[in-house]
Image (cartoon, rainbow, N blue to C red; front, side, top):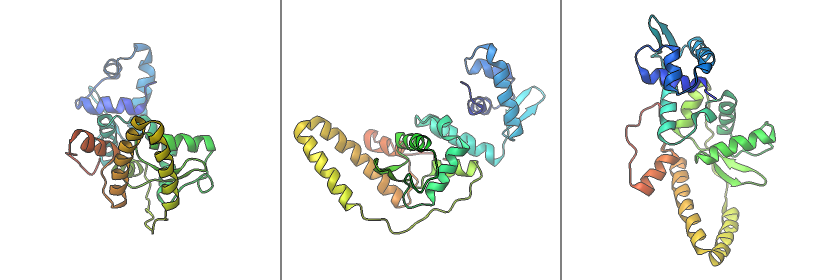
Length: 234
């Protein structure tokens, strides 16, 4: 299903004014979806993300449109489904989580299924540190992608920076599991260790306030590619 963010990306990329039927073709959709796409364009105009011109529609040049395009561009570059995170309810969850040292099922007022879905989205893209799955204990660290997501949806947030709790007990427990795994399957053990090293590096940088994201960490450690062309929009 085409979303308004898919439509916005096409309009913004086109630069010059574009007609709705051309958006349909660029998205490689059937012309039956013309009315849906045209409705999305009207909504984008209402949101002041797109402006109507004489020969079609064109992306606005305001801060909100620039932030949105930055989020979408970054997500496309790093294999992140922007339609999963460009959601006001999801942004509200992130804003709430930023204000807490840890999140769990008791201090987040969400339907358990919704909470599980949000945590899975963040975990999929390395945007959350899960301390424990059952019961849930997790920490969302600051990064530029989530920061810009909150800015886009108009959230003013204050990140809680306090002394972090001691996770030595949890670490010892996990270490015991890894040691038993090594005896059973050394290849799988080494795979987990490699992933753990990447995750540890990413979260250590986050603790120090470095805005580098998980996909960038992967590129640097696995491919030797450094992060370039960073802007305040991602």
